[in-house]
Image (cartoon, rainbow, N blue to C red; front, side, top):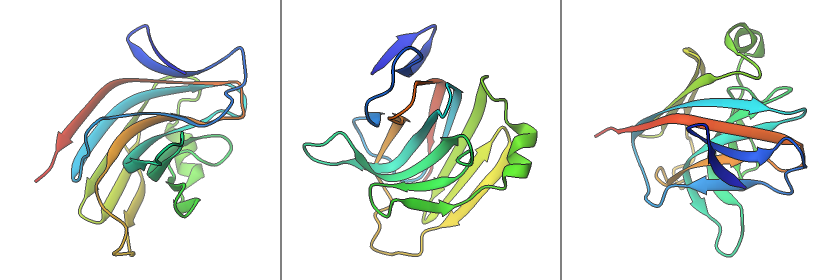
Length: 166
């Protein structure tokens, strides 16, 4: 599902439906950090994301954790809880996002995880400032790239950097 193409990590296909959600994850866990990634999302109904503080589900292709979401019609810049609560934890202001979003082109995501807070920035615009209220939710885990199943779609990621915070 994932490959290296033109200096980017690319997931999905523009010639066939992506059969299911797929995740390419780090081998180590991260707690407090600032993650920068450039991404480009192509395809009708395309959806993808960047997982943070996530865990692999044993003997399954899914992961559990926070996702900096992207995709039409309303996922851009939102924070989703993948395979745990299965819901959007914090919505972005789409009117503001549409002013900075470059559809079908390269965009910048900055994801800042510090303590129980998660900040998302899309092309410099803060879209989410979320504080986890549930003390039982672990605040560490894998970082992963996701391509969502069900559409003819391709997500590309490049210039990925992680700066760990104390």
